[in-house]
Image (cartoon, rainbow, N blue to C red):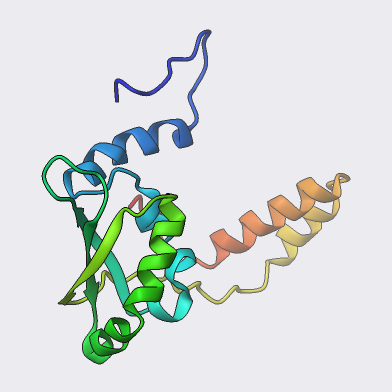
Length: 163
């Protein structure tokens, strides 16, 4: 966190200023000098390959920062397909880095981290009293925001939970 530029003056700092500095140390620990490789994996190799694979770490020969091995986790029977297009994947990765950072891929079978998607509750119609109160609001943007809040609150039951 020492690399984070300090702001002069008072006020809150944007979370976007803090996240890269916090994540960089963890990414370097696993061999990634740039966290953008993981974040932009689907752009680098394409959506069809990113769906079944994810980069795990980069290892370089001692004293060098080129000609490394990119360790990739693949799911199911996707490894032979990725091995078949390995030269194209290496070319795309090196184009992303701007120099020949990766010389080969090391594939490992494993499970990819799953992204949990929230299921949005079905919105109930607003109460007549709430709708009449919202009609009194003149500003259309404010009315839309308040209506969205009212719909979100009507879709829940009980006190709110903080996750």
